[in-house]
Length: 140
Image (cartoon, rainbow, N blue to C red; front, side, top):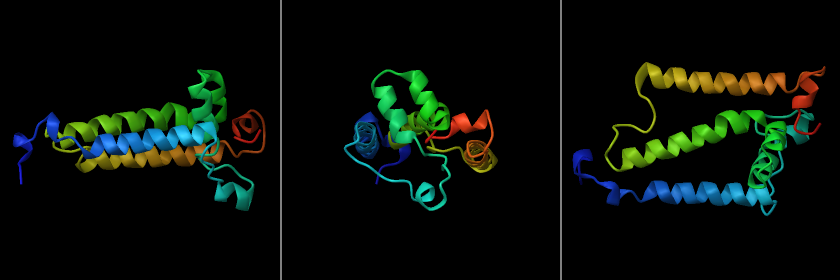
């Protein structure tokens, strides 16, 4: 077994496979090849934080940023950058250039709680039944 100091960029194998899977799934969702209905919306009629994410990806593939923002602003502004940063951090970790791919200790806990809090706030705000919040619904 090699130590982190002995690893190099050539040892990076898992993260590119994960990235390819994420990109492939995103492309399949965005083009409509793969359809995953939202069970939460089907049961309650309310949007979950991810409702409209597939349409957001599709709009991005067509270069339509305003439509992507309209479909799911949270996924566009928070989740896509988070995915990119996490994949870069995972590559650095796998190559031995970083000790962790997610912040450790209190910083990592605060980041996790902040992201969960943002998702919950987005979930609540986009389901408020009065203007201007009704425009945030994925099915508006």
